[in-house]
Length: 241
Ligand SMILES: [Zn+2]
Image: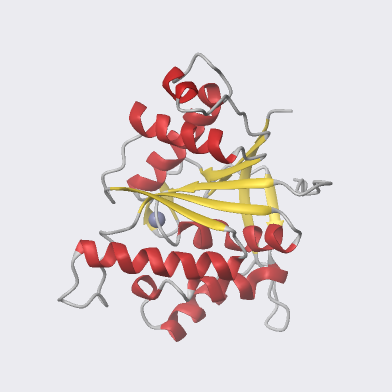
């Protein structure tokens, strides 16, 4: 496996994922590394995570209130990573379906932001180390990949987008996070602290911050030592040219 993020000019990078906190959990170390290197990162999140209730959610919380809080948490987290913008589609959390409407919306985003690199997640990941992969993650990955190919770069798909003023645009590379079939491993040891700091902004999701930090620290590589922990993020990368 090689490290292919050696682009010789600043790249436009669009991150298409389901929920606030997905970018940081799935690939925050890599995104922070790219931001430090001068690349331009924009998030396009398909839901606002309004069903992200857990044991620490106050009884008075409503989905609408949580949606608003999670917008703010995500904006703060993305700034910590070094991303330049966050856009929310606000589809219903938990009910995401990779249908033609969602595909059109993602094609619109691709044509609008014209990314060189599109980051999403692997729709084939059904099981993770923590149980069943959330259906929204699978739906987001499927819809994003279906939007890239064959629709985004072709004028005969979604001609209504041409009328809206969005001509075809094809990303050059697709990076799928949360994959069990990686072909690229990124060492994120240098940006691990930034990833953790960004994740701590997702206060509604992480529970006790100290316990959360401890859990995250345990995700080091097997060749790590106590004095020198090492961290990685893995991707399935598809290159088009
Ligand atoms: Zn998620």
